[in-house]
Length: 460
Image (cartoon, rainbow, N blue to C red; front, side, top):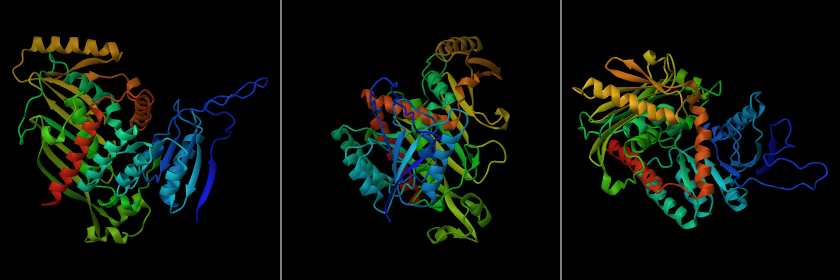
């Protein structure tokens, strides 16, 4: 049954983002230029782009999705954002449910930016159809999970350019302050020098993250849909969360450079391996007592051997890179963690997030072996002084033969806040027609690397 209903969770919607007129004036309607369409939300990231009120976005959001727990979970998060005491949002979710949700959305065109975050099996096709209809798209990672998706995604980028619409993915890790500062320091020739070429055995760039199936989002236990554990629907780890790592490699090591995957990238090797889950663990995170039929081919000895881990080895412009994406069930302490190492001719930049760092990402600068201490100390001091002009309060503290970068808490806003920062960047690109020329070729290169990695690993 098709239903179109208006869901208002705020206490009052009398005052919209555009403001209101005084009693002695005729009301002047000033509608914000961006209206969001949320299409088939199946991942909590779809809600996180609305965690905060953002200037320039209409409070009315049009949701098109089939009925079910994925949609309910999305609306519950929006309700939570609207109902909180501290800076509540005022989203007016206008929801259409029905099996024809996609065609209905394309026909209605009630907004101009489609937000996509959910089951990845159809995401690339959804992107293509939205772009073909002249709609802008902001898609959660990944925009492609296999080689056939990658071919379709290339067409979508070409069509977006022809139709003058903006297709972009949600890369939250570019907003994390330690990643930002690692990028800044890697551009400092006095501190870092040049990125070494490295070797296949000892790459000059290593990025690794560990995620957890069971965790909390916005203070509540996250319930994942059962399809999340199917690589044909969610994607393998290196095509899913690995997208962030491949993006950071390009953004940090080859800043402001357009990467041509046909000429600049060489794939070397890749591998996949599972993280077994017991039936009890699966039930805890999905609230589903049994393994559904589509997952049974991954069940061995009553454990779900979900394809949750992957490693990529490749080069960009002759620089050897290793990317590792891992999933475990639940963190004993802390939460999702990140490690990255950039090896330069004058210094090494390392981000770690261990118990020693109190599970907070910590950036440390190390000198190249044999480097003169006074020269290194002077270079770091001057480099940090330059960075502190932009990021006030950033300083350094001696750590062995290197320095740990001390970052004020004001810059440590947390992962969920990064979604608003991505949205603001997207709106700037959209409204000012100012997206850098390297963004699209780098997105294409990124998805070539991740999907080609899955293809290579799957052949083994």
